[in-house]
Length: 77
Image 1 (spheres, rainbow, N blue to C red):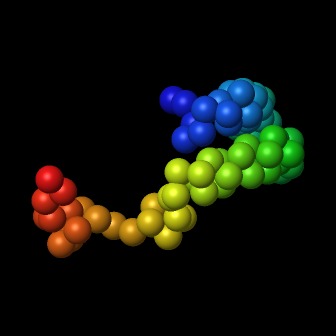
Image 2 (image 1 turned 90 degrees about the vertical axis):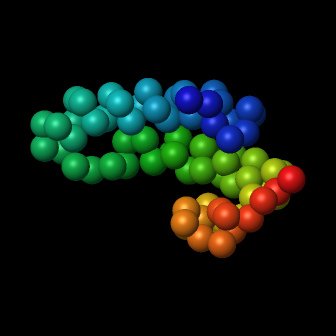
């Protein structure tokens, strides 16, 4: 799956690859230190935050549950 921002796709790919390696080669063998990919995660997180701002998406909007609410029932036509 691509990132929310097209410019973040390469950082996402790098982070996903790092995470997969860390998870399979370290975490599953008992090493729970998550610092291995933290630098990539921080760069990717900054990129995503910037993309969200460019798309006028607020983090609080992502946390709001719209299912079975009045907002979901509203017609947007």
